[in-house]
Image (cartoon, rainbow, N blue to C red; front, side):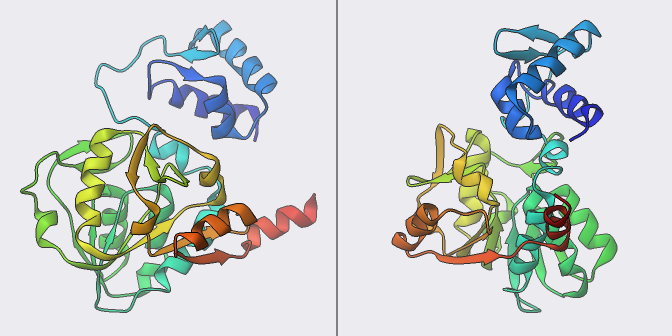
Length: 268
């Protein structure tokens, strides 16, 4: 990743939380700790952020408190080829006319492109997904009520009496911040509350996660592994993680590397 792009990601990330750690920035950019520390020092000298022990903080932090976790704009740039392949495999599970739920996220967002030629009833809490499907497809689109969280581009409601309780879905497609033996993990209690309501409206839960998510952890568990029916990921999944899914009786779909990845591999 070029230095300019790393700097843009770092500056965006420090607006998302009080302090961003060097380790978090390494995960976001794929750069080494030494490189990130140099980037932070440069941006500190330029007075674009403030260097602190173990990371960086914003000089002018936002006054509104958002959800924990990385913004949509940052996540969208990570593992993009894997996400596109995973999303294509997810849409292949759908049949025209059936109702589905698509939870907001950058991997699930990639479903909009193969969905352009389909006709389904799509319930989503994602602004980008809803907007794209309305403009570029003939799918029926339904949105829940609630507050808009700009960083993640999603609509969440803390109330039980929103429209999601009236929608039934054959499948729900969603991502996760992390996945491990205890189940799916997320970073924000409100996000978990909203997602649990949606999960309850679907017969099958289909998880869309690139292989890096098996290395991520969080302090909050969304749901146990046994609630997941199908998991779609890329070829980077380890045998150990595949065995964990098999033990939980989860159908595993592993997508091959996309054209972009293959070209990168041939060039290296």
